[in-house]
Image (cartoon, rainbow, N blue to C red; front, side, top):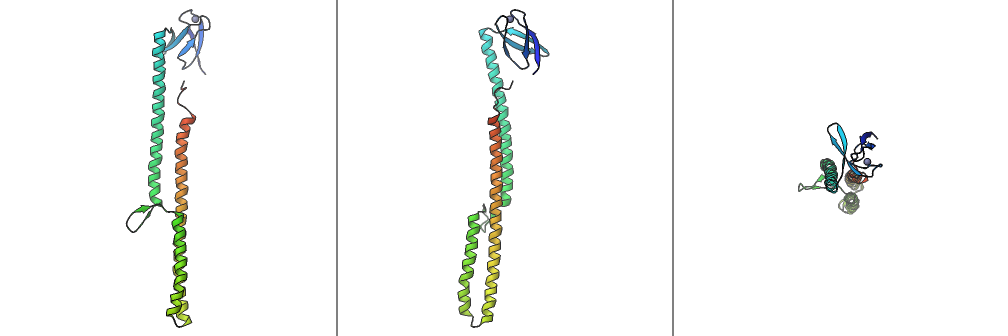
Length: 192
Ligand SMILES: [Zn+2]
């Protein structure tokens, strides 16, 4: 910390005042002094009650300024994160037949897999009934098998997409939390 050599306005005693300090008490005469900086020159001024109040106000204003700057910086970062997430989210979204975008879910993927398997099994019986011979029945079973494999493949793709979406969302929320937590961990007061 840099010390600035000053003299007491009241008793002319030498004072070493740390940089950025606005109020000091003289150890020799005990008077309250304001550190005034005008350009490159720094001097002390005795504080009467009135000056104290106005100086207090100045400190208060400066703290509020710092807080506003910090808040707007935080808001800019959050807005940038939100924007980035909105763009990224679109890549994971699924567009249904009506053109509505929806979030991929692992539940939907599981349902797709179950429906595929159940309908595959259910089609074996009519296939057995409508065919009177082993070979056409086996051909139908093969077609049902292909349908089931494609259905399960699509379910798997949907599931992977849902997992990737939730991972990306978790990452986005964590980064968002970090921005707000950093602001709290380093409060804007005590800027000196
Ligand atoms: Zn003094």
